[in-house]
Image (cartoon, rainbow, N blue to C red; front, side, top):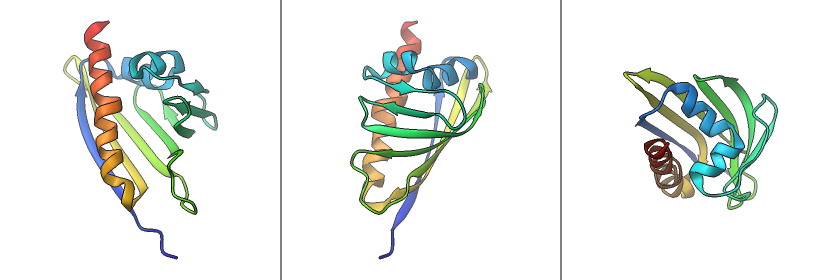
Length: 134
């Protein structure tokens, strides 16, 4: 069986510092606050996290505060036999805000469109709204 995968690449501007954006993603209380769904886990390398009430499970592979988040990542809808995908989030200061780039690799091909839209609807839009309200 050949496992067909693809990669999602997105870049968004968030009106907050790279350190604030990093903290909002990695701190489970803040993650829960901006997404509106429960997140649990550890913000350490090797630590595991969940988001969206357990829909997403992740393992932290590499963390550089305010700069880089690399995780193994999958959801409860992950097809049987597929290894976890790799999410790499890079944060760069741009003016008074952050240019956030995500590369989500090894995504099962049949789920690419859903997860591409999911990042926008369930992460980037709520993250922008969160920082607009704090």
